[in-house]
Length: 182
Image (tube, rainbow, N blue to C red; front, top):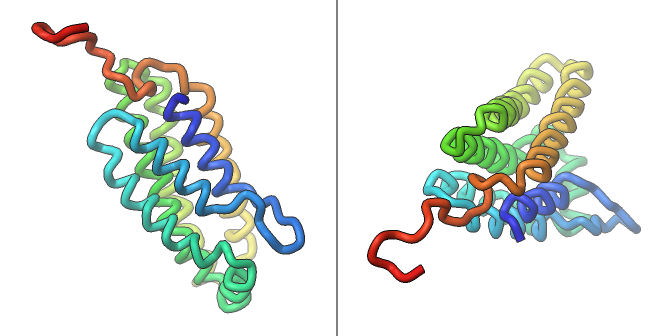
């Protein structure tokens, strides 16, 4: 399976909340494992930072998979929910940055631009809640939630649409090296 398709499924599992009887059926730890698998299959060393953030996000998501723990965190303070989201935002931002670099290397300037927008969106999403918490503005919290939907929807769409591009395949595009069997 193409790395970007694996990443798309992983991001969707992390993002979506499919709650039945208080249990999230789209468990974040499974989503983060898929993100890690997809990152491993991407070419280039630039993926290492995204993998580090994704690993931390996986570790943070493990106790939060227990409904009682997640509820206690949500009830305690909204800023705690923001704090535990930071590794995931870092992973998505670094993923978008790495994919943008791969796209640029594959002469895909349009994809580079879109991934740069997602990277910037992830940075903004990491900062906006601070503004909301310090000002007490409900409007900023609503804007943050809407921005999160936009950024993650754009990321998933890009992962699905661009999955077949040669630069995203995870395969060496240079062909056989001289002196090696093909």
